[in-house]
Length: 120
Image (tube, rainbow, N blue to C red; front, top):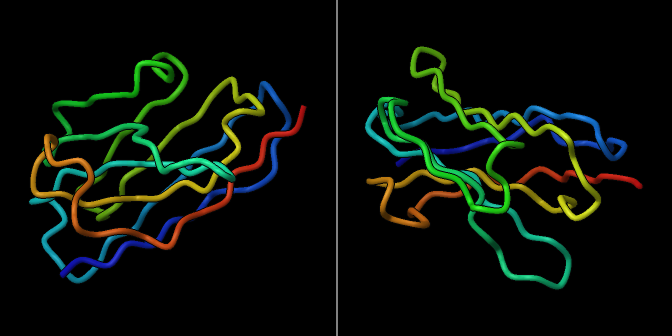
């Protein structure tokens, strides 16, 4: 069973950037597709991005294409989310997720989340 710990959240001004990290332990990281989800206050959790076990394939929420980039380093058991040109509506708790496939959304394993706040 894999454990996931996110980091890198914080307060940033609109137009700024943040890079989130998610460190995995307790499982075979390279066997999981990894995803990011987010949940804004009063809203349901939504899909942000996913990356295949090899890193060769990615998929994004349509509204975020071009601003967010997901990547992974299997040697470090870590997945990243680079967020650029941040907007106040990107404010949310961001969660890391591990799944058996890119097409399983979400997978069974979640991190505790990291808060991202974008000020206007």
